[in-house]
Amino acid sequence: MSQNPWQDRQPPPEDRPPAGRPPPGSEEPTRTDRPVPPADGGAGYPPPSQGWPPPPGTAPQPGSWQPPPGSPQQQGAWQQPRQPYYAPPPRPANHLVWAIISILLFWPLGIPAVVFASQVNTKYALGDYAGAEDSSGKAKLFSLISTVIAVIGIVLLIVFAILTASMVDDYAPDNRY
Image (cartoon, rainbow, N blue to C red; front, side, top):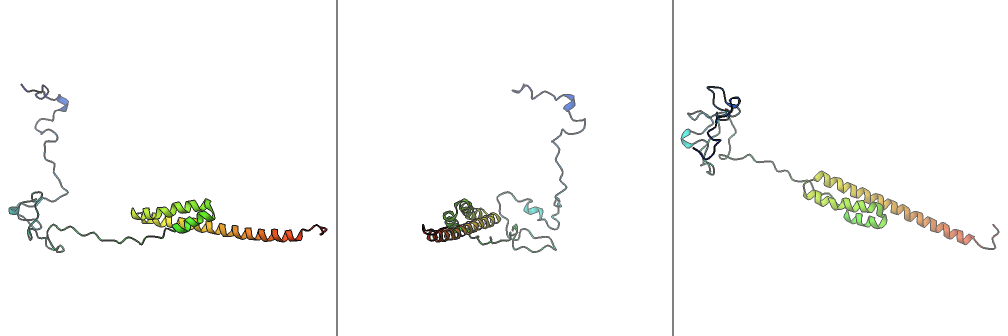
């Protein structure tokens, strides 16, 4: 008698396979998506004397496998195709100095300019080249708007100061208007 009392027990009739058929999962699955090498080592396969497939961890010997006729010749056996190398685009300017100056000129738009300017290098280092370009453009835009608003404000301040000074000269007690 075995240690496990359930080991010798037969499954219920509804779980038993039909007579003459092996139980499910015991048959060898057939694959039709990969060709099986012929026993005589036909075209494109190594001869059976070399073993197919080679044992794991063993390197192929030079000349142990030849590509099938009509295929492009490779330099060596088991060589992986090379992936093309694409150079990353140049890093966009981060406009960080201009963004910091724009905080002093008009801070409500200078703060987002600094935030976007600081994101440029991080996004570029992570490989998000489009995001880095977008952050660079937004930092430049916010800095530009901040600078334009500051210049307009300074011009209006100068005009107001000139008008105020001219009105003070006109105001005198002996003027009767």
